[in-house]
Image (cartoon, one colour):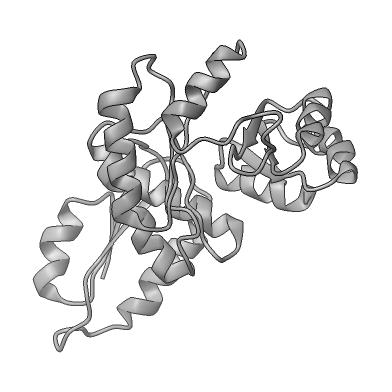
Length: 243
């Protein structure tokens, strides 16, 4: 877990969330916290005592699911609004609200409705398409859902959920933010589709460039073109042109 967390931090992850499913995980949470320099969130389900143990271990934030934490500690409710009011009644005001769903349309509609009608206190919103799927499917669903909300000005933190190496989640998130002009860092590869005019293996070349320079934080635009039609114009707008 520590190795994975360090890899995520190196890739540019700004907040790391770790599952705390049992007491042993809560006890080791402090070690993980010491190993990284970014905020660490404890992901809690079912047992409120694990949340308390994680707080003692130095958690920067606690993520709870109101639906399964236990009725005697947080009453079951049907909406994020009711849960926010419940927390406020218990004296909590440092709240981040998340309404993720695996259905992109439901997720986008829920956030838009909450932001428009129910977020009178201006609580930060954590957005994402939960259980989005594999690297290919999850990337598309996340880009559509998260991108639509960010273009609306909705969302303070994001999480791309993929059935893949978590490092791929960070890479996808960075690419998404860069595409929207929110994050001005890292390389952007502009590459043309393949067609009958292509004279080189542009697929392999673009993939190689994207992989080998993924750790660069300086905003650089690299154009990878395979013919004289796209190469001249697109490469002229880039910092570097490869053709």
